[in-house]
Length: 129
Image 1 (cartoon, one colour):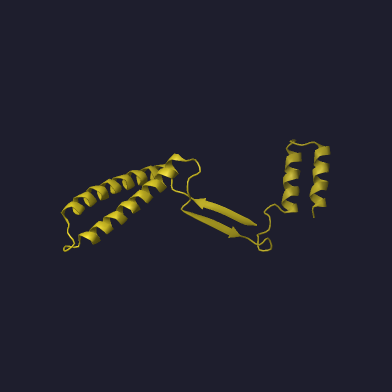
Image 2: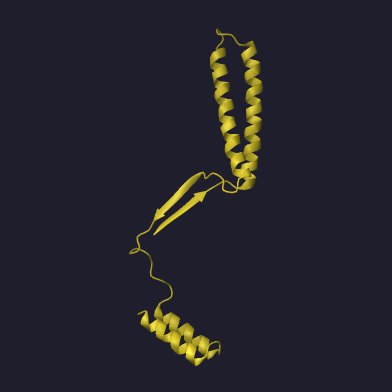
């Protein structure tokens, strides 16, 4: 048996992530504009400019990811969990025949089922052995 599950951020987490990512992007753009006007090649201006470009792109990716999760019904999973289980290692079912017969007797004694239903169900349980 194979079980698949996806882990996604909640709507409130996605909204907060989109807002924070947006403000990080604005911060990066403002500082990039400021640094690129005053920097020269001698004081490392190209390295600082490259850093802020990467910073802005990262903030844009964060904003898009969380906005997508917030505004869409399906969303994007953070990670997927796949579990494969061998049926031979599965635990035995909790309802064995003896337990089911006791439950059936209790239903009959409480008058919830008639004799015909009791007999039919009892035969079904015994056939399953």
